[in-house]
Image (tube, rainbow, N blue to C red; front, top):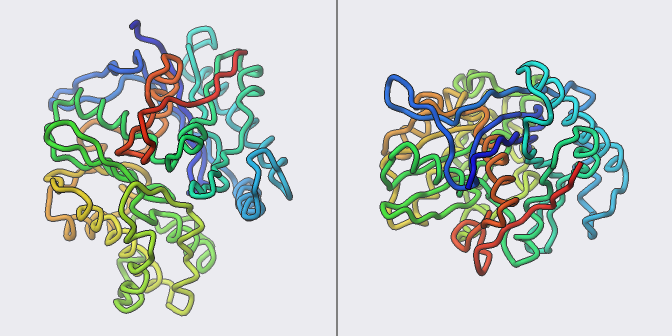
Length: 377
């Protein structure tokens, strides 16, 4: 198959903004560049469009309004307004990205549009990512693949995580032999465990940055704990941590995917700012460490991407708990910021070819399935 150009978009549960990345791939192989130190990375520019305070507030309200959803197409409360905003913001982000990189829509074969998750309850057969793929395609004049989780859920899968097949392609291109753990820490944290024979096991481990960010926003008026500095000054409440780690979703055997709202920062409401940040950071780290109990081959190397890779306190905790080499994705030429956006570009190309996006060992679906809705301009 010929290489194609795809743009991937990711607006995660941290609600900070839109990540944009371009890759070239045929849906299986990824065109990469090898650096002087021998590491490889997907070849293509990246970009970002942040959300301001009012936009974040709208998305938070829409997420709350989604709590009572029973039908995927319902848009109560501010959900319809938020969906219009998400579509418009992503269109503006791509238009700016193309202009900045001297590219035209005709040079892009497809856009992988994740949208904004407002509710994810796979056991109810329900996952909703707001954003109008058809409207985005019409405005951009580019084919768009959207709604990539729904088919997996309809087929009995968890609908997440979707990135493992991209993780495996990156690991193969880099020549990494298993056992390897590739960890993304966004609002939630998810892991891909690659065995020594290329087997994949993937699932959400539990909270990521989401509860920490919420805690900092409520108690300090800041969007996140920069570098983990606040947590570093605090003391972990061991009893509360043990209670948090007893959450049934942490203990549940994979496959499993989780909803951001299932891990509330309010559980630590009586603590000081610093102790609450420390305890919630430890909650994320320990939940990740427990993922090793689900594989017969615990990784000897972990690669960490997502916003959590920039949290020095969280990374230090992981290095202590995982008893293995722990690397920031940026250290090996990958992108800690844009790995998921790159993944959704890759998934869009796979969807166009009818290739599987998810597998029994990644989402629990009974057989490998493709997914996504293709919208022509």
